Length: 403
Image (cartoon, rainbow, N blue to C red):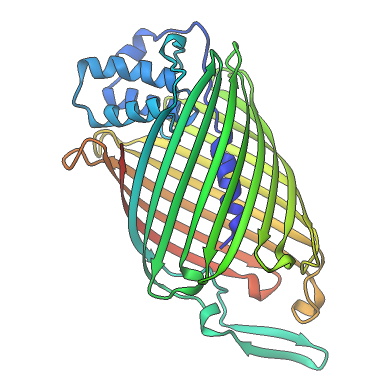
């Protein structure tokens, strides 16, 4: 699996700031929106860490619809400071709603599904070596071959947020996760993520933030991978529909007892978050340089990434539901030959594309704070070295609880 991608996903979630327009009030058109639309807008405010604005909007909804499960859940998320991207923006600052005490919230997600490549193994089970005497075909060991099957995952998360001033928020969030399959090895893993951030909000709707994170991953029984990140983000003033974003990413990676994989990364990102009546859209482009801190095969790397996301309400299918679609492309290019035994000593080039579709709906017939999530994901990785060619298709069904 691409562990750096996991870090960059956290960076993207942190950069998706949602604008807050000072001294703005709901229009008559906003007041006539459906309850599902208002809940969806409040979800987007939570995603952008505008918790007080989301709470203000939901308080009006709950006064007239106290049993609406979607509003209850999003109100709980707003009070706890959870930032999950879910809807359309509706900014209404209410500084007097801020609390200077820690607000804590927890969640649990359980899911199961099927993957055509649980261990992200090469597509071809045979590796072509380029020796001085000619090409040689070598069969990969069973644990390194593509393994298809079913798996289960559990994720326990916690969030805490505190207001330090009228426009400064401090947030700490963490999670523990575990994945189990019938294969073990690289198909199974356990890990934890911790991220703390400070967000400063400007009077014109701009936002500036910094985040510090640490991740630990254990796989193949006793192999450990550690990553750290320092992220800087700034979101400018929103125009008619879109808000520009920019930032700096500093990442660090180390695998226990294997310094050949140690690296440092520094890069820039730019993005655009657009709020329209048809949906919420986010695009981000990032790139930078990855330094090998030891004798890593291939040496330093030049990296780039493009991500696109869209979220649409699906109230016609189910009340308080939405669809999220995403697409991404990542590329990396080694600056030295990877190995004389692979590709005749060529410098490795890797290009990965992926697409995903999530459907999220309320399970209020079970409990007010329960939701269901169905996901489909596809990834394909191409490379000039066959060892790094990979493809996977998977589907998951989850239940999420927040309290």
